[in-house]
Amino acid sequence: MIGGKWRTQIICQLLPGTKRFGELQRSLHGISQRVLTWELRQLERDGIVVRTMYPTIPPKVEYSLTGRGRKLELVFTAMGTWAEQEDIPGMEE
Image (cartoon, rainbow, N blue to C red):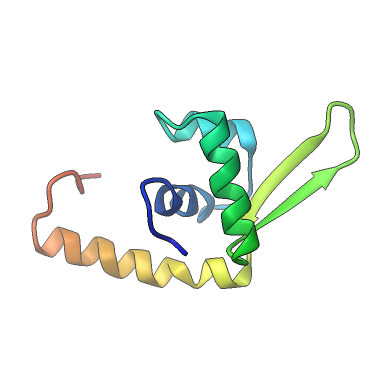
């Protein structure tokens, strides 16, 4: 559910709060529009992310974590602590 190259990064980007598609794409260097769309749809299907569409022109779409997705913060915090303790490369802030 949260495996793969992008899903954990998408979830981490949404932990602080709601983001629009363009904001997510800019914050995830190297992800294509197609892949981001696919990953968001899968996370939505799995109940991790909620997609909110506003009836404006152009359409405004926002993504945020569900309650289930918010619970993953504890998992990511624990993984970050472990990585720091084990001196895993690439985990510097």
